Length: 420
Length: 167
Ligand SMILES: Cc1cc2nc3c(=O)[nH]c(=O)nc-3n(C[C@H](O)[C@H](O)[C@H](O)COP(=O)(O)O)c2cc1C
Ligand code: SF4
Ligand code: FES
Image 1 (cartoon, chains in turn brown, yellow):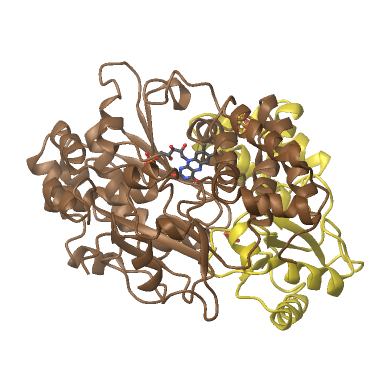
Image 2 (cartoon, each protein chain N blue to C red):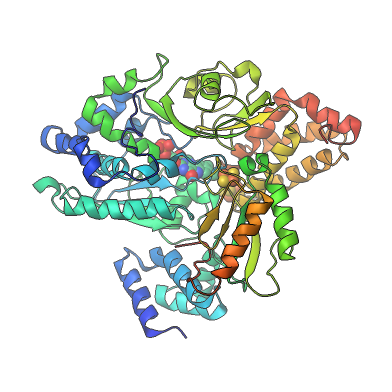
């Protein structure tokens, strides 16, 4: 199958700078600088249909187009490599095999946006990815592909790495901006959106690793080619899916957007773990709603997954087998979110521990019928928070209530977890 | 007091930044590496180097998972307790670690070698259950593999520089 992001991968090691260049690497940057205006690069990304791979799925080219080009002072680009959404490990796998597509993608984005200085924000624990990037940046600089007067043109860009010290909320784009500035990483209020007022008050674009790493291929081979890679007519491009849970092979694979869930499980994952049956999955990382066996044929694209009440999110598929208690699974997820709440706003800071308490009680056999209504109300209340962390936390709970209310009730009626 | 050489390297890091406080996380990490944890003295030194108040440094130090404002053992053991590792059975590994080390979560072993703490998703969800000891990852764990990992880390206890979970 055609691979875009994984095209340069070597088994068990990182691709070298020379190998990447020999396979056409940095030709997109050459093409853009010599043949295209910044606006044409942006238009190609709009036309390609590329949507943000960090979770929200917003059109990348359109996001770039919101950046005002006439304000005095610098503009900024930040690559989001926080990747702390449980279940998600795609950006790490990509960067451990190939840091160059991202470096080239960032440079192209800076060209389109007129950005002179970009940052890559890397989570703690991704030392190998960070080392690959640090080396890649040096190699690109020595080859005249980065820094002052790239390829002897008027275009100059520097890229800096920022190594974080670990906290999920730093992945939220405005918290990330505070973190980069060396401030306490609580989110900022939106509006103003970063596109107009972000890092040090300047227009700022925040994009995910996978998003930016797709840009070189779009420029090299054209937006039409990219769009046509998807399996479904509305879709565009390829997607990294990283699978965990009860499958035979827990792998990270690049597949066309729109590939049905069932094919991902039965194909690269080698089916369910022997002796287990599919019960449910979370399709896009911890902050997405459960899907059930009836959804196995849903094409994995943004709008199609949204239509069945969940989100494609980061493409992190977590699979649960028959016999696995989804109340306990939801409790684990809520515990994560309660711990990672940044504490800034009351509904999230107080609400998540309360929801955790109710679920703990139900799982331990002490739940009451009215607890179900309490949970349902909180799914509503926790939408009114300062940032998207708490609504994200409510997504699996919402899924539990919609698809597995009987399982919740069974805990209450039996005064114990029916799976224990 | 920190050695002159460390102070110089921290000041150089700050000089490279657009604004001094942008270097705050790097400065805290290096000071922590020097002291073993971010001591009160280190908070004061960070404040001075970054041009911040102690309270502003405190605000940052208490936010991050990998900055320790209390004494910790020579090596941190982090165990991922997020959803994919839960599904892979991290709880059994945690129980085993607690028994082997004779500590509860958050505790430091009597010999001061290890501190055990749970942590969020390590971005290796296909390889769980897993832990990190210092900067080394041990994945696809079974209780036997945990014992081996502890053995290896005890032996390399004093020789290798300890990164406390960060490079
Ligand atoms: C709590 C929270 C955590 C997030 N974590 C990440 C992350 O780790 N990586 C990421 O790319 N986006 C993350 N996002 C989404 C970012 O805010 C932002 O939308 C994204 O980086 C935009 O890039 P994209 O348009 O390329 O997807 C997070 C959002 C929230 C609310
Ligand atoms: S919703 Fe939670 S994480 Fe977001 S600002 Fe409020 S307290 Fe912080
Ligand atoms: S859930 Fe444990 S590494 Fe991601």
